Structure formats: structure tokens, C-alpha cells
Length: 371
Image 1 (tube, rainbow, N blue to C red):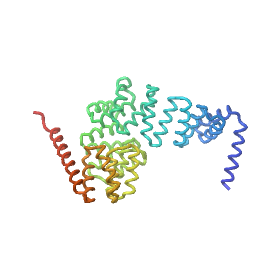
Image 2: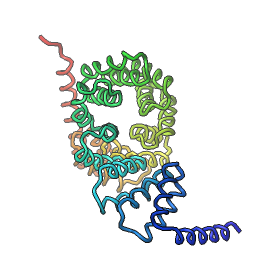
Image 3: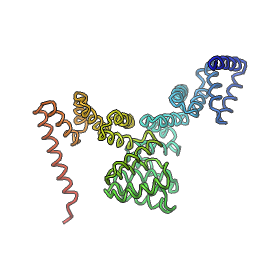
Image 4: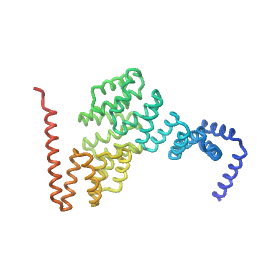
């Protein structure tokens, strides 16, 4: 019965669209779009697309209306068709936003970099590009992008906050502290607590970081990254159960948080819940293609599942791409010994012993007091 009603309704709407002029359909679609009635707008624009498939404004408005309905994959296709007809920074920014909403941060970043070239003063594009860089762990790119605005726009809180976060995560804690002090002038806030906690975490003050992160999530439970960092601090202070809950809370608000996906996947691997672990780890790898830490965790899951040929292939590729990754050499040696390949195992054991000795020597130099 419902299907029959829908068929009749669709036929009636098609007849109505045919009896309306293109100008009427376009104007009605725009009115519906501006009123937030995206389903009606989509119907009108789609009726127009059939007659006029190569009109930029129709394609771009259809993309925006589809995005308004949350149909981001379809919106991406329409934005791409529009841009093939005419280059336009605003539509390209909308395309980047759609990629961002689907969790494809890499494509969002690439698209925003072009937007920034075309419209260098577009603050929305700059803010979103800096956020994408942060999500990809590209702290230096954030600093390069935003540092010029520290003096010209000292009251631009999104810019200042993103810059301070990148400085702290890049290990430039002194410069980051200057940014923290600027934010603190407006009083205690979740943002300032997150920044201070990150600074403490970077210098291994895990207890202090934990307390700041706890305050951050208390002040604003929806602050991006706050629960992820809180989870890492809880892990570093031995509270694995609390860390797991924190990562789950982060992912409840942002399923595309890289840190939470990675660490929750690693915890589930330790809990021997391998299917669940792989789900989170594979999504983390989608967010940061080729990330060594994620690749190591995935290979470790496959070793635990006794999928040795797959684990071997992934670990051999990993040590080739990241030859200084000590833990990967350890895992590969273990795998070789399990396969009764003593010579290969001894070779990997010698490599990680050498790397470990070099790491210890570097640590001793780092902590040696000046004469």
C-alpha cells in the first residue's frame, strides 16, 4: 500500500514539475533551500538537472541541498560535476566540507589547499585546513599556515587556539605557553585546559596532564580531542578501564578521531577482541593512510590470530618503510622464530638490539647535565 502511494505521489510530482517553468522550479528550489527544506529543494533541482545537466548553479545548489540532508557522498558527486563546469572557491570549499563530514580528511585537506590558493583570505577555509592538518598530525603545516595571523589577528580565537595546539604538539612548549597565556586572559576554559594538559603530556607530566584534561571534559564534554587526550593520560597513569571509556566517549562525538580509534583498537587487541580491534584500527588507517603505529597494531592482531603470512607481509613492509621502528623489528623477529626461521629471526634480533642501544645512548646524552 505504502509503495503504491509513493509511486502515485512521484508521478504527480513529476507532472507538476513538467508544468512548471525552469525559472519557477529554480526559484522554488532556492526558496526551499534557504528555508532549510532540503528535501523539497533536492526534488526541484533534480527535476531541473534532467532538462539542464550542464548548468553550474543547479549542480552546486543540488550539492548543497544534498549536504543539508546529510547525503554527503551524493553531494560530493554534484559538487564535482559543478566544478567540472566552472571553477569556484566557494563550491570547492563546500566539497571540502563534504569530504570532512565523511571522514575523508586527506581529500578534504587536498581540496582546502587549492581553496586557500584561490582565496587566501577565506578564514573559514584557513580554519578548516588548519584543523585538517592537526587531524593528520601535520603540526608544522598548521604553524606555517597560522603563524602570520598571530600578530595580525591576535583576537581570532579559532586561529590562536589551533596555532597553540600545533606548537605544543610539535614540542614547542615555550611558544605554545605564550598562546595558552593569551587564552587564559579570558578566564578558565576547556580550550585552555586542553592546551595546558597537552603541554604537560608532551613533557611526560602525565598526572598533571590527566587533571587538566579531566577539567577540560568537565567544562566542555563536546570539545574535539579532549576525551582522546584524557584517555591517553589515563593510559599513561595506569587507568586502562578509564582510558577505554574516554576513547569511547570521544568516538561517540567524533567517529573519525584518529587517536581514539588507534588506542581503542590497541586496547581491544590486548583484550583479545580481535574483530572489534580490527574495525577501529582499519578505520584509523583510513584516516591516516600508511601510519606506522596503526600498521603495527594491525599486524599484531593478525599475529595473534595466527594469520602469519599476512602479518609477515605487513611487518616486512613496515620495517622497510620505517626502519627505525624498534617494536616492528621485535615483532618480526618473534614471527620468524615462530615459523622456525632462525636465521631471519636472529637477523631481526640483531637489528632491534642495535637500534635499542642507539636509543639508550641518545637518551643518556639528552639527560646529561651541562658541564
